[in-house]
Image (cartoon, rainbow, N blue to C red; front, side):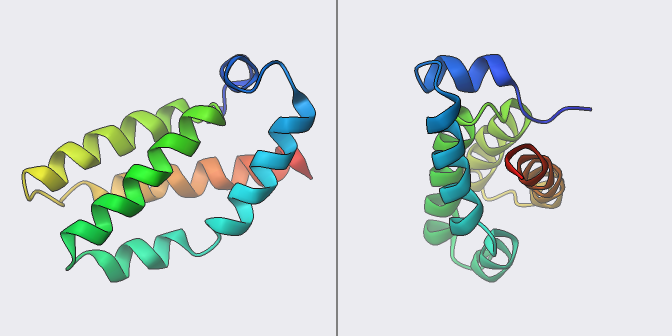
Length: 105
């Protein structure tokens, strides 16, 4: 299963593979410890919301549709104080992250 949609990221990044690689590399560096950050932030809803909201934006630009929709759902759940499904989002994040590493390597 592909977690990254090439047509989407090309649409958002002006059909530029070079820009995709720049953004993707920056994403990989910035979010290398994202899972740990989220797990640490579970007790701080505001920080958790901000971290996931940032991830939501970048995942849309990188064509990570499944992760984008998952982050949207998680943001709704944070608003409702329901953090049960966050582990599902973290699994999707891991799969998307690993696929992105393969694509730009």
